[in-house]
Length: 144
Image (cartoon, rainbow, N blue to C red):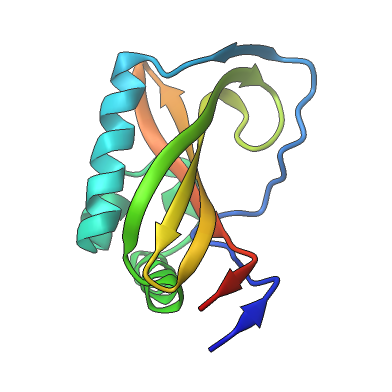
């Protein structure tokens, strides 16, 4: 099915990439990288329940386990499995606004899926010295 301009918003994407003058740093701290790697493995394996249980309070407070699982499965059904994933950029911020207030990290990946290409974004947030996945979404300009 061909779809132009498809935007699949997964989990709790409600924010935009506006920021209000917070501190920024490029790169991924090792502890955040470990959470990012684990989250990617869970998504690729379809282990959406584990992903939800290990997600941030922000994620879990905005969506039920059932809705989270359904949205992740909907994305998988629409795009297919990820074939390739290449990190495009990572931005660490300390802000009081979107995408997540507080200390966050956003990593953007160019991805090739079974049914097309797109961009994945992972937003992690730090609480009490630990990193958690707060948002995940995929955008695509078309599906094969």
